[in-house]
Image (tube, rainbow, N blue to C red):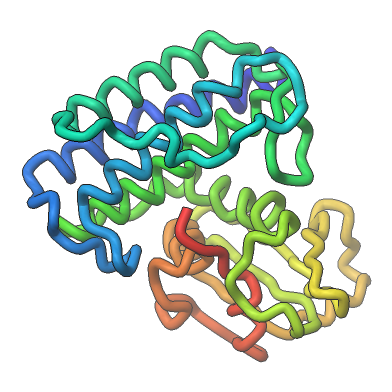
Length: 257
């Protein structure tokens, strides 16, 4: 199998695990209950948002072209007035999973990131969209369970190689230096360069030599789950083992998925 096929199966496994966990978390919740990790949102908003995103992706991902869709506003897929929200979400989720399962990950498909314009991007994106909102739903209704370490490590990498280079960040853009992140439970490490122009670069740690001068100015160590949640602003960096100029870590935050 190609690397993209392997990644497809990995992402679909996450989507099939996290989707039912999201539904279970919201099924018995009051729809007007607040979602503390997404300020201003209720459980109904969370269900609606995730279903809208599923509908938007399902509409464009199988077109076989890399051109931007004419309308990229997911709220076009908002649940109809008076619909049973969970029944509607079930339909959106099942249609998306079936579609993504049927598509070749190398089929051309538009995306908003500096990544290959293929369906593989959306296999991964929909997995992590579901993962982070499953955590939101559990945090709002029951005790939130940590994210699976392998899924979380990939989620950290997606923030660093897609969200931040695409300019989807909520932290300061005027800081310069190198930040290290270490997932202690899966033995993964990332080095990120904050550039003077406000951009970011994910350094390839596999090609760096022991003699290279990394000049790390901040380091955060912890579980892959805590790292991913911190990058999304769901938990504070104080859950992690920190060293150096910890202000730099704020430059890696992205927003509500």
